[in-house]
Image 1: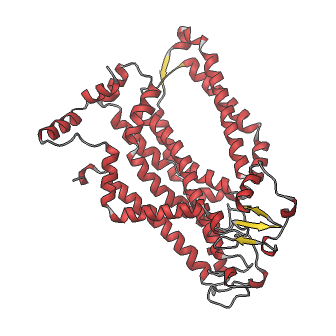
Image 2 (image 1 turned 120 degrees about the horizontal axis):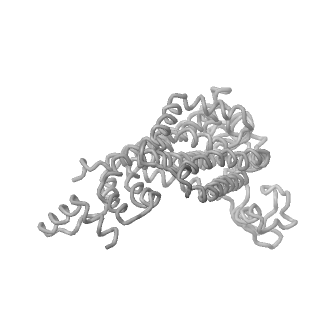
Amino acid sequence: MKLKSLLYIFNPAKRADDALQKVEGAAPSQSYWMMVRKQLGKNKLAVYCLRVIYLLIALALFADLLANEKPLACSYNNHTYFPIFRAYAVNMGIAEWPTELQNVEWKKLNYNWSVFPPIPYLPGNIDEANVHSVSPFATQQVKSTRWRHWLGTDELGHDIFAAMIYGTRIALLVGVVSMSIATLIGLMLGALAGYFGDDRLKVSRIGLIFNALFFVLAVFYAFGVRSYILSDALAGSSLLFFVQVLFSLLIFLAVMAAGNLLALPFNRLPFFGKKISIPIDIIVSRIIEVMISIPTLFLIIAIVAIAKPSLMLVMLVIGATTWTGIARFVRAELLRIRNLEYIEAAHALGYSEMRTIFRHALPNAMSPVLIAVAFGIASAILTEATLSFLGIGVPADTLTWGALLSEARSKPTAWWLAIFPGIAIFITVTVYNLLGEGLTDAMDPRLRK
């Protein structure tokens, strides 16, 4: 008999609901996520917030096409080029710039024809004719309206509109990546703590000894020996650092797997093969309590203040310090789910504990996680803006919303340096929080009609 059939047999609420609807002549009940989507659609405020998030994602994805010093398409020396797309290929190493377009100033080229993005500036471009924070409504020294700074400039002559667009990319990247890290950690630890509790996780004595020993070796070989490589990668680029971290994780997993394989022959010995219980719930709960007791923002500031400024470091630190809420939600859900009938059915079919957790228990505990992620993204964006405002964590040449707010401190009369990024931060944080509240209501079965 298939597992789905067993799950249906051992779920009286589902059978009763379907039977009632058949009596009433209605169709069988919809899936849980279809009902959540339908309920969320009734919340007009949450729907509008979701549309705003879609708009922010579009701005982040197409920032290079909206604000760039390179033309979208052009004809130069009777050759047609697409410089922005060619730049992607050059960065990936699959193409090279033609000799006539190497180290050029794109605005000064004599094109046969050209099509520039709506904002013909990059955040790092300096307009020497419009330095010292020119207002959006002031007279600007530009060749034509086409080159006007519609949201003004900062002290060095950077275009604020371009900085706002690329700041959207940085804000969403920090929110999504950091919460992905936090979700991964929270799901793993919360699921282990909630499912196994204090007496259901049993490990052989030799397995415990080898895992403890090889854990130290894995950390040493994966991160200790490769510390200089990771440091150089962090100084180079975020992508290179991410690749090197993945490689270190593979080394870590390989060393741990080798330890478990070496422990297998000893499991046949009565003394070493005897199972002992690991109080994983107590261990994870104490770790959560320790993390919660430390002020998160101060911890992040302390870590990023002693390291070289890097956007990837900021995302890693935020993700590694904000997983506790997700872990607590998952732990609470798994404590409830582990005793339900379909989990017993999975055990009766002989499924392994890991398959039962990740295929059957954990998917049914994702509702509070999605809500926590929505609120967490808003919190991560606000944290990054705070760090940028304080001038730590993010490189000084990276213009973010928080960095623009920080510039406004030195020149209070430049109101546009505070108003525009302040509104952007407020809107982004608000829509994610309202979406989280909408998900809370949509996933509450008591509010369904």
